[in-house]
Length: 223
Image (cartoon, rainbow, N blue to C red):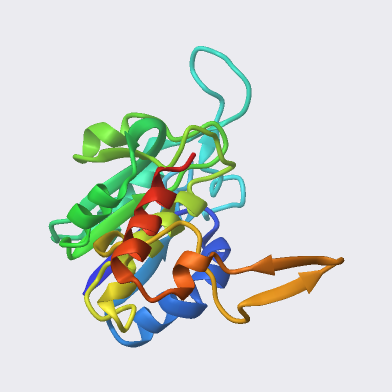
């Protein structure tokens, strides 16, 4: 079983996707577990012995060197990671637009881990000193910027989970392990919409498996 530990200021943002479909069933079957850790829960009062106030639970501050927005403080994130891994040996992922591109090959390597920590930033990011406290892998899911790291975290959870034996029911459902096309079709063989007829490509109806495989491969090469 893989346990995904998500460090996030907004754990509620994970609930909808993780509570549905294949990822939900994988959790119910004990194939994966997902736990969330909010850095705000690891904030400390500014004064020793004082009661923790709303202001104390703020874990962001202005960036050194100037610039817009706020940066998440390092220490609450470090403490959240420390809580997540305990004494376990874990893979720690730091989401960074400049990080290594997340690919199927990376997912294959990560699926062998028992514990994966996904550090999800917000605002202008997380104080980079977090990466000096623990060995981490910088990962990017694409050449674009998102509001937070929760979506990338769910992308990794989904991509890794579906590659675990038995999660999809039929391991041939993993497209990368078989000949498949980006374009797929099902019944009916044809239908009409606004006066135009839409048909399934003839090659898929002939039963010639070698030619069908060639067609699927050629489809992957199309832009």
